[in-house]
Length: 118
Image (tube, rainbow, N blue to C red):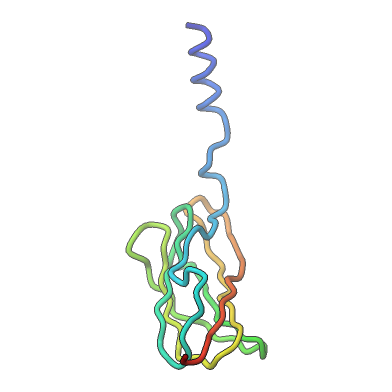
């Protein structure tokens, strides 16, 4: 009985996963190149709940151009959507900053490539 009580106390008092930062776990880009000159919706899925209204996503290019994108809540908790404008071929990135529901801020960049018609 004492062992069970100690186990329960350890689980209750131990720091939980909820204190971790929101980490990008999946994206609709799936590592595939984006097609040139078409509007492309992109979903960013994080491993924990985030506050979509405090999320910022900026499109960056190799030429150091930056463009803030409108962020919309995703279909599931922890997801947001942005729409890429028509882009010319080349390397790009989505620099994002999210606020997790537990108050932690995560910043990173998701790199992707735009390819021309084949």
